[in-house]
Length: 334
Image 1 (spheres, one colour):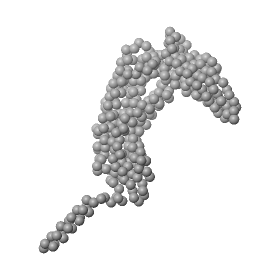
Image 2 (cartoon, one colour):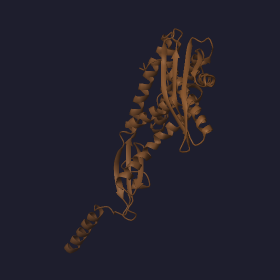
Image 3 (cartoon, helix red, strand yellow):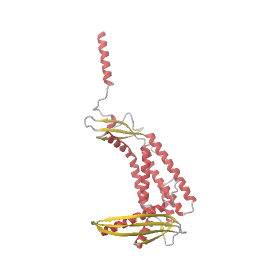
Image 4 (cartoon, rainbow, N blue to C red):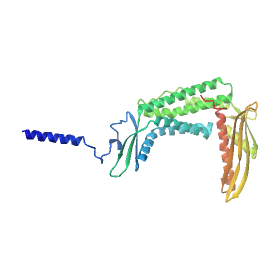
């Protein structure tokens, strides 16, 4: 009987040792192809990466997690493109998209690599990136609060100012901030438990309509000098009208453009244009409110194509000048 008891005890100990021994290296962790027991989806955002090298697998895991926020940025970008195509031009739209990227980087700065595993059969490296939902939601709520406070200051500034261009600058920046807020709100709704996010204080649609009406009340005279002045005047007037300004020969503001260039070539089969474009915005007293100077250097394999590219670049720069005017004189953001 004693021998039987010893045998049973030995068997039990062996079984216990086998149970607590090292895991089978051929068995992947649960997170490789499914949910993670240690990092449940209710509490963590997860990203998975696979590559031949460990460092590349980690980078791909972080990128996989970041895609959660990129969806919101993509949706907001479509809204921004609609806004900027009729009111500001591409430059300001790019500014908003860069700001959105900065907001996202703040959120995902807390991403950690929680686990890694090497598949002994394929020799592929796997990595798991995690970000606590509580940390991500806290960061998003803080940033939304910052944008709302800045928007409130800008709206008050627009209401208190009697100068139309300063009003337009404050209103433009306020609208930009609320477009950024929309993207952060979408991200917050996607990862927050209740899915509600933070209630908005302002309607973007109403802000857009007020902004449009304000811009329409600003009358600007387009003026051009230098080469191709007639064509340049038409292009400048078109850029102003597209942005929403009222183009008028008697407007209190004057936006001028001066173009100087020379054609070079052909050289080695290429035609070149080199020159400069200067744009200036003045008020009724002749005071310069905004001024820009750009160098021009355009080339193409055909003479007509080089000239077409020259004026394409000029049109792009004129829109940039209009976007600068919309943001108002000086950098007085809160």
